Length: 349
Image 1 (cartoon, rainbow, N blue to C red):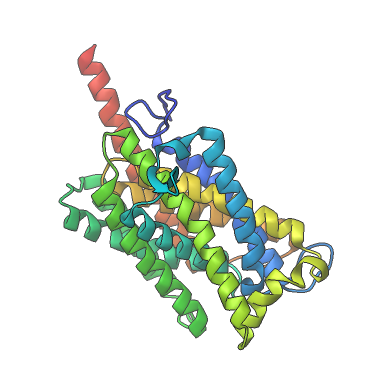
Image 2: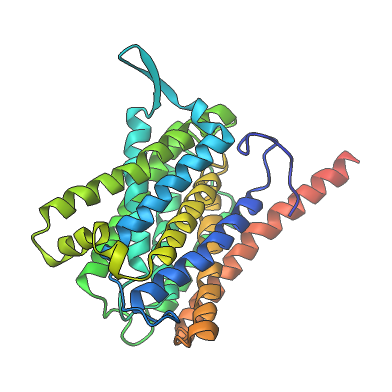
């Protein structure tokens, strides 16, 4: 797809949203594949399965480092609001970006957990998470007063069809309560995050977008890691004991520390590219399907990686059919804008 050169990545001359979608895809495929492989204990070294809760601390530590390196390397931290502390000017969030950062933290944690539950494939969980957010997107647009174009509506309807096909499969509703709670927390977090983005960012002003992005990222990984540390200190129930192990014995006994750190860095990559997609000034009913479709394609690739690399079973035909509808949605999103752009160029000539 055509791109426009820019140093800020979010202004009028920024790279095409489709380059961000490619970056999202390139990080998401290995991220989800590794998370599933580690949690199932199917890596070549023969390591035991690691629960998602035990995996979270290491992945979030890596995400925190990745976030800091990115903001420092790009200089985007300079766009954050300055707060006076003991005579020093410290960059930090506003109350809106703080809340958005908290929801982003929840999205980071629930996404990694989603690919570690037993009995559900990567594609199945992706269809639930992505389809749910696709339903939320036009509701947020309506609340924000944004117009929704016809091809965005077509993509939305195809995405809803993907969910219908997925749940047509026998046994599709047999999910554990913890998985249902995870999906629910994920969707509620996105509802709040998209609303805040529509209110405070997604504008023609690149500084406003960079400010929102930088402040949100400053909050997300540290907040989630701090919450996990608190839960680890409590440590009275199996889940909390797993989190405590993630801070302690995991580092010396698991044998999968390098994989966990890779998962964390790749997770941060998805957060960076995914956030840049959502901050595009166009309506959420366009930006969200671009974001969701990229990850669905990545999920399919991840399943084939696990199949050919580790002999893991492939998803059912129902799930592949649902993913096919998502791909069709992607076509509706990409082709009409390209045709419209070509017509404008022809008219200008």
